[in-house]
Length: 157
Image: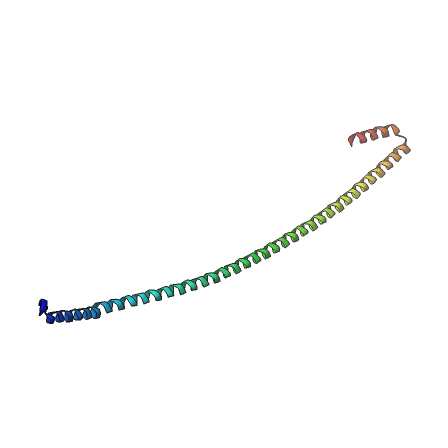
């Protein structure tokens, strides 16, 4: 044996090293590698699920925005309808008020005309009575008293 090399010891150490390498690979490296691959797979699946949920959420958001826009349009239409009906009612009430105003004015005008006619009739009646009384006094000859009565009557009114 040159250089004092024991081939048997080298082969045993090589064999031990192979057993140790194979054992470490079998008992440590393979399970750790399997664990890491499963974990990567789990995270990939979660990422895919998250993306899917995010897409679903975006679809729901778009649907809700469309519904909200539809509701806003309905509210605007209803508001316009109510405003239109209110304006029509206001115009109707204004028209009714104008008609009542015209009726009241017509009635006031008619009442004023009747009162004017009554006053004219009373004035004519008073003038007739005055004319009769004057004619009586003229015919009876008491003209001086007649002038005094006339002046008193005019002063009283």
